[in-house]
Image 1 (cartoon, rainbow over the protein chains, first blue to last red):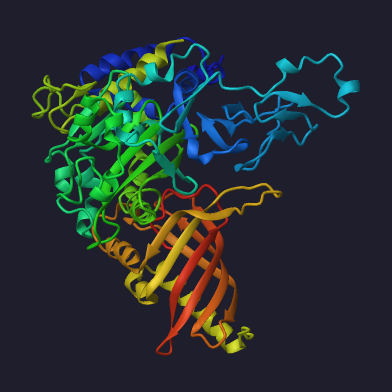
Image 2 (image 1 turned 90 degrees about the vertical axis):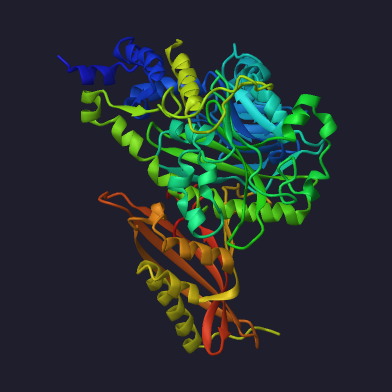
Length: 456
Length: 172
């Protein structure tokens, strides 16, 4: 007879305790708590790969990374590796990087340009659209092979919004716009400020961190409260004066959706003229074509700027000003972040810094240098995030924590806790709050997660 | 002007400079370390990616960076390490840096010397037996200023594509 623990290891998909547990998560969130177990459970992680990553729309890269036919880059959806490639017709494809014959990797360089992918094992060859085109001795070896059935497995849906490429592995996925819901309206206001748009600067940074991917997602989405605590060194060295204002004492607010997307908005960290109404200095703002936006979007752009946000499940967006060193003028930078899960207790961070195609080379360079000094693996802010997220997976697998049914506190902003409420007068899409002294977006994120996780 | 061969003496002096630098970093004497930097120094860690042998592009495209620092940003990083809020390095990681394969090439009559070296940086934290091992090559420019050598430029060519450490809260 096997123990219950062993049995659960042997049958990771068994309907039983894990489903009951996952069903309990939503009701736990109503009282503002989240079980530690969601941060480290192999069974839950395996379900996440199927029910979250292989179901939703996942970010893969930016169109400016693969501008020409044949350009490709290796990318991940969940833990599966894909070739993100622009085919000869200019169509962006997302192809599973495993030969249909024996599963060998057909592409092992991370970036490049090619018309075909040739498997090194038996030399099966595919067009960069994924189509099977041949194999050695084809006429003798595969006389009756149906080429249509033996192409590389392609993601059924690939769509872009303002250069950001997403794919869904779910044949029944809703269109990307429906998946984004009201978040799409804000993406226009963040990325569609002119026809030329934004471009990736250099290759993405990648670094491995001990964390469950959800800790990063909820942090970027809405965690203003941690900023003056964990990132106090920014004020201490003199690049982020009055850091308390970023943590709840200032004029920021949350904006979120029941779909699990959300962000922190602010009314401007910097005095004019450094902080133009779009969040960029006048020199850059002069290149914007705000008449592209709807009048209400334009009004939003002239009132608020993104600070940080998350698109469910694993894309982060950041646009903040920072000085690269004390005494230097602050500069606004924008970056995209993807959290690639590597088991339940590790992630690989992917970081793409963006520049405006219409901005001066100097502005984009200054923004890039400031972004590297403040965020990313060497950033003096983000170095500290890389340490604190290692704890939740430890607690998640703790025998004592399981015995106690340990839950973490997500009660910030619940009634009686703080002056934090939904803004009934918010005239634009989504739920807006009156301050950032709360965790409503995080609770919405986990509710969305729990819904996906209990849906077979 | 053709560069001349480095004398054994210069070779030894450059190696000694790098060994002293590694000692300062391992001993967390960051302000002493900063003293070794020229005030116009450029410190860069370009991003590496895997390219095919037939690719026309290099693994280091020098368009993307993990660090693109100058003296003021290095100085900020050093000062941060003396605050009580540098949580990534508090408690500090235990590092051991090995520097080897040092070769130098004087730039003719210029006070600058090109110095190539290989490094291995072991980094461990807390009670764990796990550690991070960062390795690569450094392409440095040392400059003689008032008799002493200073680091005028450093490009760290990592042996890694994805960084195998949670942060670059240390200097390589």
